[in-house]
Amino acid sequence: MRYKIEKSEKNNHWVCTDTLNGIVVVWENGSFNQTQKFTELDNKNTSPSSLATITREMSDWLREYHYDKLFINYRAYIGSRIKEEREKKGYTQKELAALSGILRANLARIESGKYSTGIDILGAIAEALDMKIDYIKK
Image 1 (cartoon, rainbow, N blue to C red):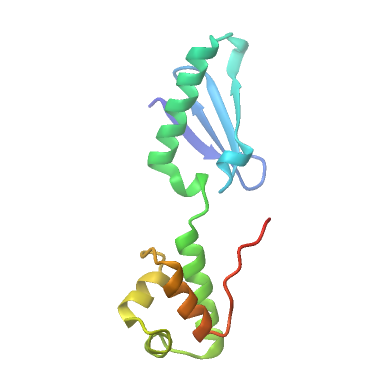
Image 2 (spheres, helix red, strand yellow):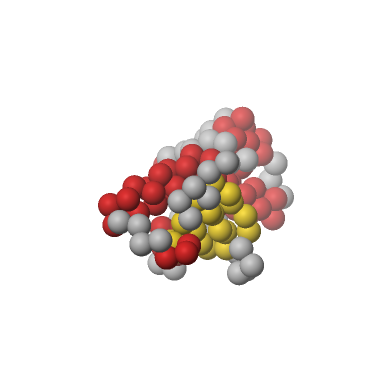
């Protein structure tokens, strides 16, 4: 197996090793683009163009097989927040769906993170829950 992925000793981080080329990448869970750090083992002095190819291939493999460790799953996050607020307010899925003007089955898929919805539907759900949608900087 060319790639090996495991939890890092550093809290909330992952490590992936390219065993063929001796390259390691470490990143914070859900923040790959912002925190990735590639390191060459044994200082083999791989050429810059080869290193670029190796890191691209590794990143492609990680995206294909471990996307959930690289990036936040916003569908699942937003769905769980909707469910949490719905339950706080004591609504059933059927009641919230009716208040939002959507089908109960669609609300269930949204809450489970299996359905990507548009801003208009999110706005209707937020309004029914007496909430607002906000885009904030970290």
